[in-house]
Image 1 (cartoon, helix red, strand yellow):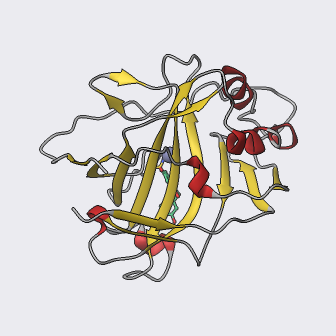
Image 2: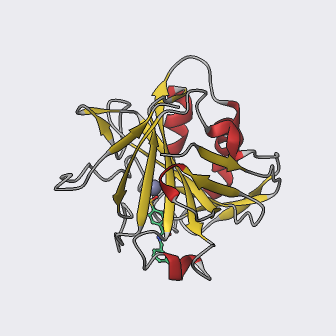
Length: 218
Ligand SMILES: NS(=O)(=O)c1ccc(C(=O)NCc2cccc(O)c2)cc1
Ligand SMILES: [Zn+2]
């Protein structure tokens, strides 16, 4: 496979919202580009990023490596702007979306970029709430230093689970702290006073079936 190349803009005042299933940062970046690797000749543009976690750090990722789960997983969601006119249209095609998955390992040093997200969570405690992240966010900082990855054709991991995703999962995790994960778990799935914490929001891996998994050791 050709090398995967990406170019992101740094943006401030990105909107983060509590979807009821977790937090999501809307980052439509017309200037961003993800191309090469398994993406053929098409250019994919960043739309949003979010993450998945578990009630303990023993689980939380949506992919596992030789059966081993990580404490969480960040998803940078892109859509094919070469072939399609909108995200919604792209989500109807097998090559419509490209999602970069980055595993979370728990360690002692907190991830500064994730901390910018964590610092806003108290303002979006309830479902439907949103706020702007004052800090400048550079999606490149979410990526691990080692750029080896696995890739396969799969689906959205939440309903409607469209089979429209070229998955690109980095082999090397990034480090977050237990405290940062604890803050994720304090988000509420409800919009009202009732508190039902979003303690886990990951979908367990599904059978590979006859799908081919490819790897690139960048
Ligand atoms: N966890 S995931 O990265 O697979 C994922 C990414 C995006 C979405 C998403 O955008 N869902 C809403 C949606 C689905 C299909 C068409 C749409 O216009 C919107 C869901 C899951
Ligand atoms: Zn996801």
